[in-house]
Image: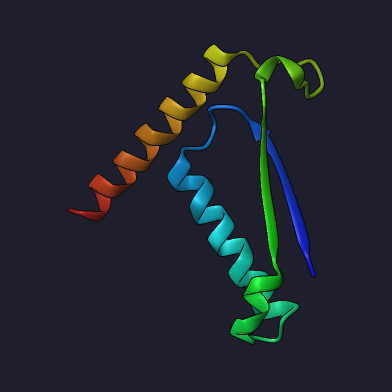
Amino acid sequence: MPYVHLHTLKGLLSPQQKRALMDRMTALLVEIEGGGDPAFRKHVWIRIDEGEPEQWQLGELRPTPDLVERLVEVREARRAAGEAQDGN
């Protein structure tokens, strides 16, 4: 019975993105560990924990809620620009 525990910054993922991550990680484990057996899905545990940005540090980078908000804005702008290019 696999158990996947993902830690991320609060506000970085939308509810839809969390659902997509859980669905894809589950599908991957069904394919690899479960040998493609759909019944294996009921044995896969996925947990996503979100921590306050102030509780994280990467080297000298100490995220803030404002930084997380800016990262999300940049990501969404890039996504929209990519979709606009694909539509041309």
